[in-house]
Length: 34
Length: 178
Image (cartoon, rainbow over all chains, first blue to last red; front, side):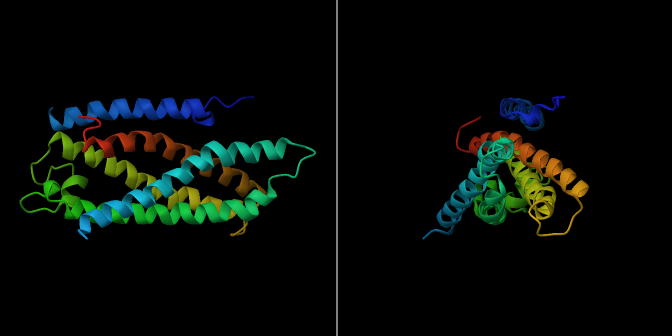
């Protein structure tokens, strides 16, 4: 059975990285009060 | 030569070595090993494991150390990261909360520096400690090797995810993000 972990695919890895970047951008804006 | 220029140069060189090999492992070696294993009549993956992987891992983990050290030294030297009583390294790693300078740049750089720090810990911890078992540099049972492969793979993949965000925040100081 295929493992459902998105990190098992290259596409999933890149999408997860982009999502992390967007989420952290908002965290930075929140913490810096910008 | 200005020490900052030298440190930044070393940081870029070693950073490219580190992250370049990270992408090599994830996008080339892991799929290549799988294809070599699946190829019944082919030469098999053992030469990659014996001759390529140990050398790539040496440059990878020492590249990570030099990148982190040169980055930390650079942060400590750059005047625009320093607070009134804290140096730039401390200021960035505490996201400016010790000095009260939580500007967008310092918080963004702090997030990037912490992502890189977690990645360095992943390199020397889960990745390298498990690779030693996989490559036979450290004794392990077949069950331990199976588990070591999965943990090393996931730690390595997590580093690719973090590297994408980390590079955005490292570039933030130079106008890439904010």
